[in-house]
Length: 209
Image (cartoon, rainbow, N blue to C red; front, side, top):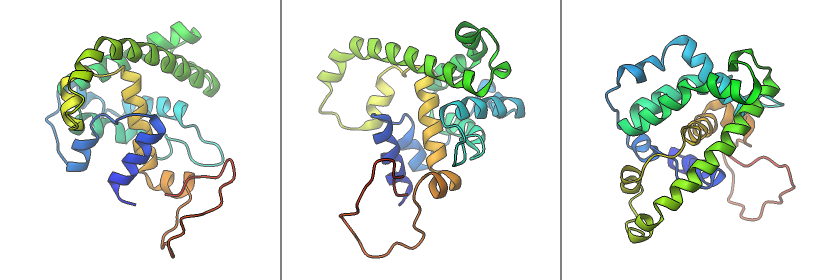
C-alpha cells in the first residue's frame, strides 16, 4: 500500500478530507513562522505526544506517543498547512491547559491517562459542534461550488475546521503511516500472496495494512 492509499483509508476512518494531505503527497514544504518552529521544541513535542496518546492510547498495541506522532505533528503543520491553518492549530493547542482546567480542573500534564482521554473526548464534542455550525454557515458556498472537485481548492477557500479536528487528523495520519501503526495496529503482510477478494471477517479483526 502506498502513501496515497494509506491517507485514503485514514480519511475513511475520520469520515472526511484530511487537511493538507495533497501537499503531503506532493512533498511541498512551507516556510515556518516562529510560532511553528516552537512546535519542534522538546517539551512541546512531549505535550503533542501526550495529547495524541489520549486519542490513540497504548493497549495491546503501541500508542501514538510511542509511534513518534509527537515528532510527526510539527512537520505536518509546517510543511502541509497554510498560514491560516497553522494559526488555528497553534492558537488552539496553546489553550490546552485552559481547556484541561475547564474540563478536569487541572493542567493537562497533571492529569491521569484516563482524565486526559476525557479531555480529548470533551474537545471532540466541542469540535463537532464548532464544525457543524461552520458547515451550516458555508453551506451555500459549498453547494454553489460542488462541481469543483479539486480537494485543495476547497481546502484553501473554506475556513479551517476546529483545531482539535486538525490535531486528530494528523494524529491518525501519523500513527497509521508509522512503522508501529502499520505493522502492529494493522495486519501487515510484508509479501502479499494471491489476490483474495473474499476474506472472512470477524468483528474486532484488525484492518489490513
